[in-house]
Image (cartoon, rainbow, N blue to C red):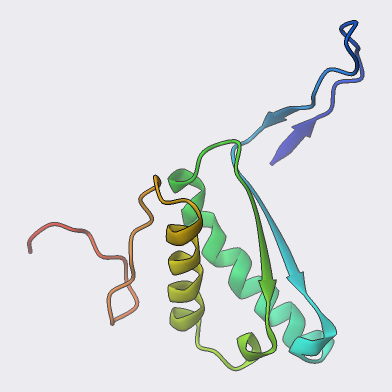
Length: 111
């Protein structure tokens, strides 16, 4: 992902930064989650879950995810279920597919 910051002014003040690359994700994984190894594992799992969501969110979206201590012991499907549920609540006009019980995305179609 790239971010271009403009330094020009247009008479009314600085020109806002131009964003390139779609939505941005930020992760907060504090020491309360666990040791450095555990925190990095949680961050990697969350980062991996954010990739498929890029196409689902508006380009101007900034998403900040704060991992709570329970994230250290939660399974990946549980973390993804919670992440998708939170996004559905926070961005109601965006369709974020739910996970089915097997851990894969629900297609919404018939098999």
